[in-house]
Image 1 (cartoon, rainbow, N blue to C red):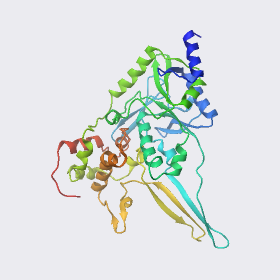
Image 2: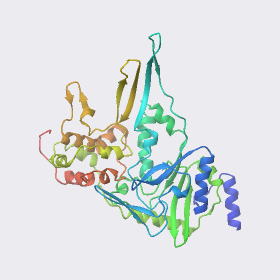
Image 3: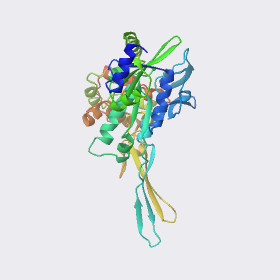
Image 4: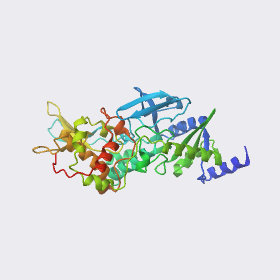
Length: 394
């Protein structure tokens, strides 16, 4: 071991991890998964399932999509083999981390009638699970921050979400591939993770040399790194990592002009482009299901035939559903046009008024997983290009 490595080990032991980063090899990355499991985390990361890269439980690097990449365009998704054995050589798949923090279906309470006729209501206690998310992209970190602001830090706290969010360990990965539908650069949410992580990795592959540049973002991240054999990053390592991020940023599949976007959308409720996109939109809700920031839900009450038990269940919902805006006399948004317009203007404009940030992080999932390939960046560009004087509210 060199004197430089001795100094680095000394700084690690003191918890003074250099901000210039560290290097771990594949074997130490595999140990990272073991260390997190030993610390009591449920370790989740990318895995191949049903011809897609999704998020699932992992126990070793063998569970990761080694050597696979994705090809994405509006309405299209496919996997291809890479020419190397990258562990994170893809963009993002249909899953987002919100499925673990805000489950698609959750029982809020159950009521049971006792033998004496009394009704007792029980609220299930969420299971105390500490999640370790491996492979979180910068756009997804920004999405988590959006949901934190609404569900954890806002005036109406979702206790289940807050509990699941507590104690997470996040291993971010700076993107080495830009998807054909990505536009995180336009939204200023990537491709490099800048906050919200415990450890951040940049995957570096030079021929047979496969390693990760690691940066720490928390004291717990530094503590985990101390359990690994890490060496100090060289200037060459840092330049290589910077080149990965710069290359990805230059290869975005889509762009979106955000300057003045809020005002442009809020002043165009009657633009004829809304009619055009409504003719193509299926109102299938795919875009909101895959979106990492959408948090709309609905509740249903169920009672057994004997009237002895009842329960209230909350499930993900969507502003594209006809029933979502149903009031006493029907749906407020009965047309495809009104529902698509509501989604787009809320996501890119009204959200800013409500929460101080855009509701879009540029991950591109809504483009990729739209069955008819509607490209929101194209729709918005068309609205901005031709201001409308139309007065039909649709």
